[in-house]
Every structure is written in C-alpha cells, then in structure tokens.
Image 1: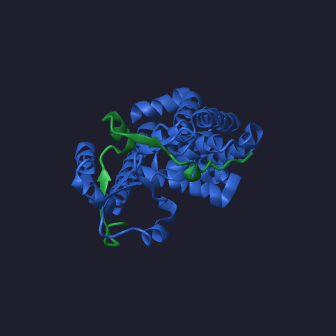
Image 2: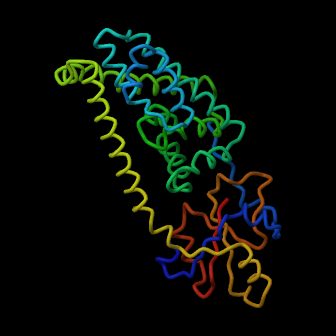
Length: 41
Length: 270
C-alpha cells in the first residue's frame, strides 16, 4: 500500500528479530504507544 | 485410503476423536471429512450417533482448551506462531482479532467453519482473558454445531453414497475420489490466496546489515524506520528498533497522509 501511494518503501528482512540478533540498537516502545490487548474481563 | 477406511471401520471412534482433536490443536487434519464419514457410518449402523457426537465435541473442547490455556499464558506470541504457517501472517492475526471485535464471543460459535479462524479463536479468547466458564459455553456451542453439521451431512448423503457404492472397496474408491477432489480444491484455494497476496511479496527487501550501515552514514537523514507491528504485539516490556516510529497498520490510509515522500521508508514487524 505504501508503494501504491508513491512511497519508496522497503521491508526489513527478518524484522525486529533479525535486528535484535544482529545486535543493533533497540529502545523501549514509548508508553503512549502501548495499547493493551483487549480483554473480555 | 483403504487403510484409512479400514481404520474407520475398526477404530471409528478413536479415529474421529484423534482427528478432531488434532485439528483442534492446529494440526492440518481432515476433521470435517472424518465427521462426514462418521455420519455415514452412523447411518449404516456401524457407529453410534450419540457416542460420535460426544467424542467429537469432547475432542474439540479438549483441543481448544489446550490452545485457550496457551493463549492465556503466551498471548500474542502464540498467535504469531500459529499464523506463521499462514499465507499472510499479519493478516491472519488481524483478521482473527477483527472477527472478535465485530462478533464478540459469538466468534467461538462460528469459528470452526472459517479456515484460519478455527485455530485462532480459542487462543485469542485466552489472550483476551475470557472467563473459562464463558469460553466453555460458547466453545461447546461451536463444537456441537460443527460436529452436527458435518455429521448430518454424512448422514443425509448416506443414500447417495450407498447408491454409488455396493461394496466396501467401491466406497473406498469413492472416498478416495472425494478426498482427491477436496485436496485439489484446497490446492486451488491456496494458489488463489498465494496469487492474491503476491503483490505484498514484490516489495523490495533489505538486510539488517545494509540498513544499519545506512543509518550510521550520512544517508540516515533520508531514512525512516517504521514499526508496523499491530498494536497487539506490544506489551509493557516491548522493544523496537532505536529511532523507529510506529505506523498503525489498522489505520494505514490515515497515517499515509502524514508520511514524507522524500524519504526511504523501511518497515518491519516481529
């Protein structure tokens, strides 16, 4: 969809797991971005 | 196939139970076909309807309970694992979750009839902390409906089968053909899905090392790294690529309006 809309988009092979395995820098997800899984209780 | 039929003839209850249980825990087993066969066997007097129904429901409830419990303990990690074998893992999770958002608990009643969702419903319910008693109630309804639907199908078409098969061997050939047609239909369906999602596979890919080099160079100003994991992946301990920003996949059309077109966008999920 990104490319369909004219963006020069790429996919990182292996995603976050590959990034982590490679020892590249990471950071905690900001608190505001955290969304709890919806629950029935 | 003859071996399978012989198994059904001699160990019908066990075959039904284990096939249904195996499918319930996510293994690709032809439980529906086993139930159709059991329905026909009931019609011919080889098996008892109440026992078949009881065993099928029990097998489904047990299998679903396993996934429900794992879903409760592992949350989205389990859903991600179960969706790995899907044609489109991200869609698999989102579509399953969407069904719960739209239909709520009733999803458990109809889930077994929907490929993909049938395996995801129980762990999703567990992940969403549905109460056990409530889960069992709705799951029982779904299991009973599923077993009855396919069992009745076999029962109703017993005459049709009998007209075509005058002997056990002939029945074997017919079932063989039925299974072959079912497999063919499944292959066509998977090919159609593969074709449908082909567009998502043509997006250029980049290796981690290449991106890391770019981020460490002068080119970093023209790079935007975006986390496109669905919100369910996040938990209090969640990490992401340093400097990346979140792109909510459920709200992509709106999010696109805010993105710069003069930068290379690198997206990632789990």
